[in-house]
Amino acid sequence: MNDHMNQEAQHGEKPVKRREMSRRQFLSYTLGGAGAFMGAGMLFPMIRFAVDPVLQPKSEAEWVKVVEESQITEVPKSFKFQVHQVDGWYESDPELEAWIARDASGKIFALNPTCKHLGCTVNWNGSPQFKDQYYCPCHGAHYTIDGQALAVAPLPLDEYQVKVENGFVYVGQLGPNTRV
Image (tube, rainbow, N blue to C red; front, side, top):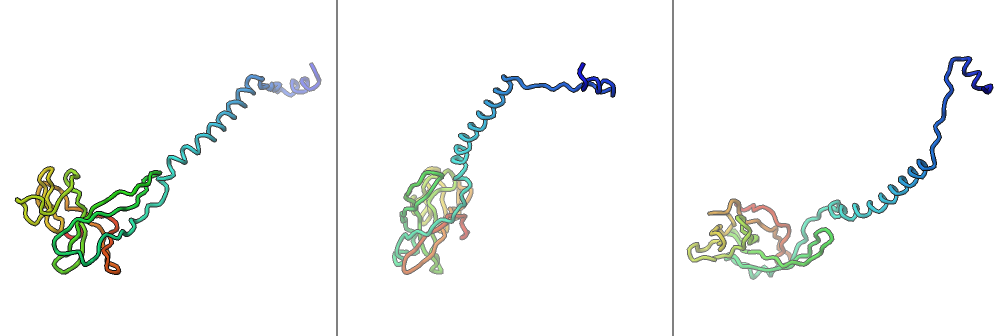
């Protein structure tokens, strides 16, 4: 025995055996770590790409010029307009529709023509049976001039925010009906 082991044996301590790493273990750890690092490097941009649209702040709808104020009467008329929308990575310019009229006090309002029953399109005076009402031809839902549901549909028609500026009517964000 060497001198060092003799001293440890005299003090009652067991000699410490060092475990050495084999070449195979060293290569396994090194290659595994490098592979994990490269895999994470490839995965991070993909996750970022998929999640980024969700992290973008939601913006209010922009005001869209629809019609001259002088064309609005107490009888609802349908007006079509285009909006620019971005859904994640997809940009489009769909054509939307609004039924715009004046109420008894002269205030302008705009309703979305999508029926709240199953999403069909309603029309003003669409049925001779329901005169001066919005009528849905799909399942017979009908609404008052203010968009209040009279039959079949569970909710009133949605309403666009409206502003009048420089003689033109602008529509904005679509939301729940505030008229009923």
